[in-house]
Image (cartoon, rainbow, N blue to C red; front, side, top):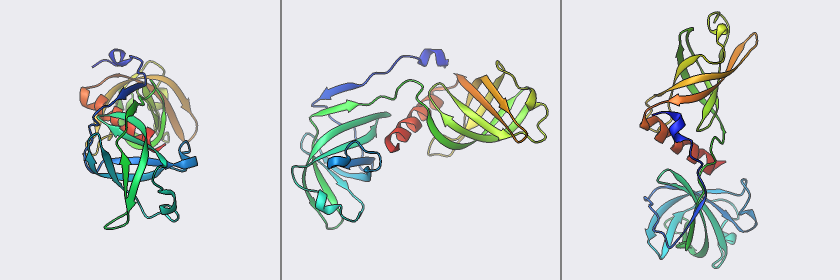
Length: 228
């Protein structure tokens, strides 16, 4: 599938009274009170139950001082990945219990925002990767990643042929993006080249891959956004 077909600008959307497509065990991030807009204040939580249109039950970690903030009527901001999209909503705290675990009961949200990833937003990462080109093969690391492409870094010592890489060269990159551990391939076009005595940095754009790659990439970016 050509990347040019995937260039539609995604927009945020708001849904009222929507039924969340959630599975028990899905990871969420929850922010409370004054920390609702702070990355540092986000708490990792797991969904352990849902009664649609009534309430959600999430399991929280035992964070010092957290229980004193779980006051009924307080507002929590929840972020999660549902069906490959980053979603967010605000919900009123109903109550919490401490046995058999720290469980928080949240009002089922009336409005859900689909926080779609901005086109080509880059996320920092350190993914092992292999690439193959007419000038040779190498192993390296993907340093940042977006829907449009990535930045590759690899050891330049002894890579005389690869030092001849120029903008416009075509290469195939293989990296693991999904939980099954299988590497996925994407055909890329080199857009920029930087070299020094120790390494070569390539900026590449994605040009062609199968649907499994695009789906895995979207989910990887959505989860990265959730945790950022």
